[in-house]
Amino acid sequence: QVHVAESGGGSVQVGESLRLSCKVSGGNYSEFCMGWFRQFPGQDRQVLASIHSGGVSAVYLDSLKDRFTISQDTAETTVYLQMNSLKPEDTAIYYCAAAILRRPPLHGASCHARANSEYWGQGTQVTVSS
Image (cartoon, rainbow, N blue to C red; front, side):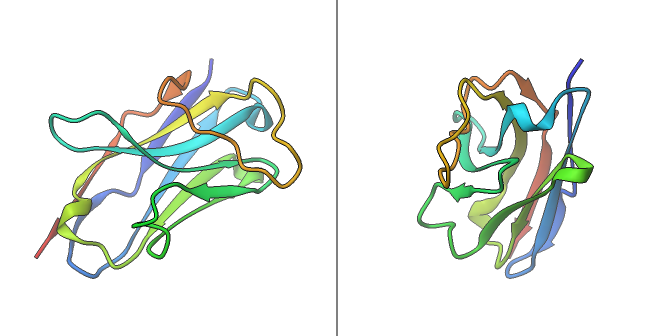
């Protein structure tokens, strides 16, 4: 049974940083594309970033590329989302998900975090106050 669990959310002030963690257990980490998502009230989840065990990562939103970084510790099967210079509009519930890779990513290519990922964490609230 695969289990995904986020941690590290909280309340911060504008301009501060947070690092979210996502621990994956019970499965073969190398078989997953790991993704970070966030959800604003009343909206669908927004995909933010992905990474796979080969180390290639991607941050999908141009507006976040200079502030958000995805990384991993494969030995700990843990994925991180470093969020810097936080803004009030970053306030959301942040989710981590593990999507079963349908085929290995091409060498040097990132994987695609899927909205229909098979395994999801419970979400962690991030609140940024001005």
